[in-house]
Image (cartoon, rainbow, N blue to C red; front, side, top):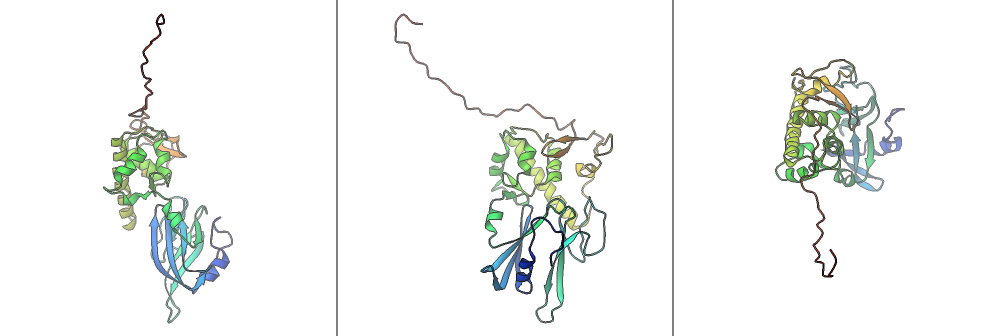
Length: 285
């Protein structure tokens, strides 16, 4: 059942009743920050034999299992299952003996995440830009074209899930721009700067996934390790360079000595060239 105080967008008790002991998990997909459970139903749900549960994690949402509980920076580590602030538990049972074979818990302390029952997931997934982990030689040039020569600040573009790439949140954007030595408000990026951003993004995401899967800390030279020290005075990065917290697409952490906002201009401006008209009237200049 649903907890008394879940997230704003959540499964209703009627949704849960219609799905319980009626569905099989056919697939689990992810794009950007969205996870989608594909469910095949024995009895049709709202007229459909295949439905979808869309999971959005918000700022502090997570899915844990009895053997794997992801840690949260904003919450004390706990080995207890289900974790604090659990709003829903998905269980898979054996049809023969009725015993649970596996389960996961959805928890969200700040309740900005969501669980939604959908009859079609194409609209939700289709409107998202290329997933950050899916950047390759085929789509890189297209994404560069979206990042370069723009009048918006680069961090704003990176955080827009529908514009260039999806799956980039606040700390990822800050880490990418730090390693790319670009100010979050930088405009009119060159294609070379945009390419560097994508290379760093791919590397950061791949490294983060590997570290999380192996329960390892992120590399010590990442600015990620210092972003939580906002209240401290004189915070420095791994190379002893001063860190600043600035207002840019929310709050951004930067190293001002290497992330300077440059007065870049579009590389090609459309100029109006007026045609020369010969004066055929005598006596006029």
